[in-house]
Amino acid sequence: MRTTDITAAAPRWARTTGTLITVAALAACSSASTAAKPSSSNTSGKTAAISVQLTSAELAVNLKSTSTVTSAHITMSSKLGSQTVLTAQGDETAAGGKLTAMNLNEQIGSSTMTILLTGGALYVKLPGTLNKSGKPWEKASAESSNPVLKQLASTLSSIEQSASLDQYGSMAQAASSLKTIGTEQVNGVVATHYSLMVDVSKIHGAAFTQAAKTALAQARITKIPVDVWVDSHKRPVKMSEKFTLKGQIVSTEATVSRYNQPVTITAPPANQVSTT
Image (cartoon, rainbow, N blue to C red; front, side):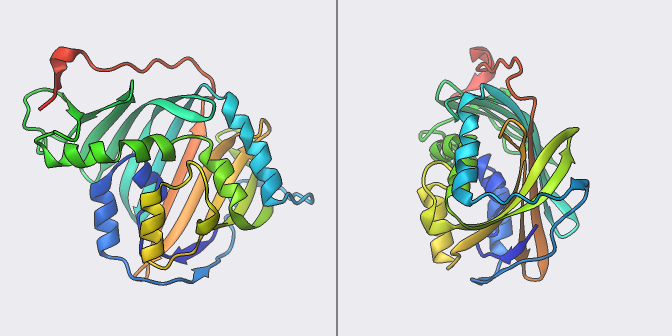
């Protein structure tokens, strides 16, 4: 795994789920730098070294296998130093590598939130202190009276793009360097660990939205280190990033499992949803 100083500070997986409060909090304490500083690779759980080295283009081709995925279970954790600032887990459905629906439960500090995306609509179960509707669910829209919901609605397109599984192939295609670290056990599955240095300017497709690219450009961040673990079916099973913020490490780790298991994601009952 590598680390880098980054003003954008917000882990990409935090942006993926629309946790803008977490993103803003992390960004507020960040400082600008353009240098990516590699650190020693995380070899925990390594079972064997790999002599065959793929190119980033070859890895991108391999990761096109995500186009056949119909569902997956995801987990995520972000830390600022030793303090956990975000954890999340849930399920998503997909078609052609693109997200079609998602149900994600998040813990942000002491607050919990659920994000449910289905049928092109975004439903949110906010912490009690932010929910003034009297109903458990609220539909996020540009007309929402709740500013949090209004802001989340503006990220709908970003969520759909960034949570899509084909983002991994896009990142590999944009990598200026790639190193095969070895094989490791990830949740009981043998996976090959790759370390990439991703060139932001070369990213196309779902890996980054234009808003994310703009934020990185403003921070003069040109490259981002990413580690990804890929199973024998050429599917990503783990991803990690590390950033340095004013001397503190911000680390994000995500796993993907339970591929193609039966998953049903439906909108909440209408009588439990506020649309104001």
